[in-house]
Amino acid sequence: MTQNYQPIFILPEGSERTYGKDAQRTNIAAAKAVAETVRTTLGPKGMDKMLVNSMGDVIITNDGYTILDEMEIEHPSAKMIVEIAKTQQDEVGDGTTTAVVFAGELLKNAENLLSQDVHPTLIARGYRMAGEHAIATIEKLAEPIGKEDTKTLTKIAMTAMTGKAAEMAREQLAELIVRAAILTFEDNGKLDIDNIKLEKKVGFGVEDSELIEGILLDKDKCHPGMPTSIKNAKIALIDKELEIKKTEIDANIEIKDPSQMQAFIEMEEKMLRDMVENVAKSGANVLFVQKGIDDLAKHFLSKKGIFAIERVSDDNMQKLAKATGAKITNSLRDLAATDLGFAGLVEEKKLGDETYTFIGKCKNPRSVTLLIRGGTQHVVDELERAVSDAVGDISATLSNGKAVGGAGSSEIEIAKAVKKYATSLSGREQLAVQAFGEALEVIPRTLAENAGLDPIDVLTELKAAHEKGQKWAGIDVFSGKVMDAWKQGVIEPLKIKTQAIKSATEVTELILRIDDVIAASKKSMPSMPGGMGGMGM
Picture (cartoon, rainbow, N blue to C red):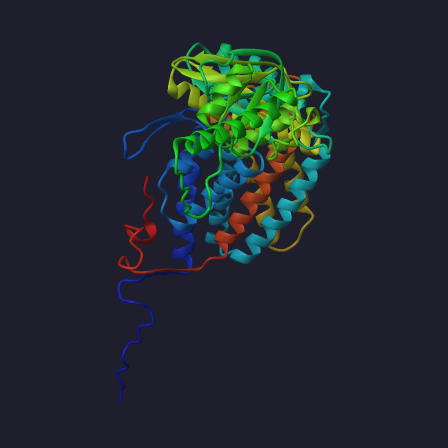
């Protein structure tokens, strides 16, 4: 006698569940789709993407992180790939496309192994072993770079800007970036990129960009009677107001005759005059105040010939302190000459329709400003992204003091070492390590494809050169021939490569270990139209 069992539902109505090989295929397909999106942007001959949001705002860029950040990606596995780009951007500031494309290729090769019934945990273990060997290999290959090696640092900055809007003036911009980096390089051997402030302004051309050895503020003096320009400026930084403080509780002042009213006004005036006198006694002729300045105090300051700006942000106050050497104080009574900073020139100037204040020619500034110019807003925005990448590359190089050849040379050399390592292994992990080595070749192959070259011919020539011991043999995308990347000045920070390998390997392992995807119903999760398979843009 057969029994009819009532089906048991353990998930809410409308939930979707994908498991086993279907879940793995879906996750891999979503992640690969993200990688393919940015793949055509890689290298000097990479193409740009036009991104248009729901408001009609347009972004034209080939920066991998910007593209992925602006895309409205919904698939959870695809979001993991976007996280690779975010990590790469946060840690290095460049190499986001490399990291994402490599992760996509790792998953593609993993998919082939899964179809051959290699277990996902074996692939993940093999990838982890290969990743560790790859990082150890490239760290041995890397060349030492110091802050005194300005020529190599300039080449690194130029490599970062090649193929982007900044390419037309990359040499000039690279020199400015390296100068900025050396000026702000700290005694502890680190470079904090926050100390290099990027300001962009539409107008003139890229070649009119300049390095201000100090700070540029988008503010003007707070009183028309104040001087417009001050040489050999002695700068005071005050993080309180130059105003009469209001009482914290409501209070009434009872005035019985006009003389009391006059006395009250004169007392307020004296307090403000004393504040200004304290500033003047210190020897300061330039004043930056984080909060407000009373109108009467502005008048007294102008009479003393003191240039003053109010409501300066905390971030800019910190940068001014680093640039000028001034100490930020909240006590006007204790303000002394030793608290003041120095700038060779403080000047109010017009840039287009807006008024800016230049605090430049500082002695030994620890914070500087790169003023980026361009003909249109789109050009300036893309220039800023390119310069930001270059600054990140210089910071990454100076932080660990090592760099490697670009143009696909590093990847071919690591791939050779990883494949050789695979032959020393037994068991199925060997297949995963071999697949990892082959995945590394996606970078030179993509560079060749984006340049319109035959990738098979290019890879064959590159491998032959590396077999002969030419460790920096890379692809010249303009001639289609093999070149010595280091000698030709195509150089990248070591950290770009190590971070890309680490991030891509870890995320690939994570995705491969997922064999069950349970998505809540659309009612409880409205952000995922089209179920688990959807990836919106």
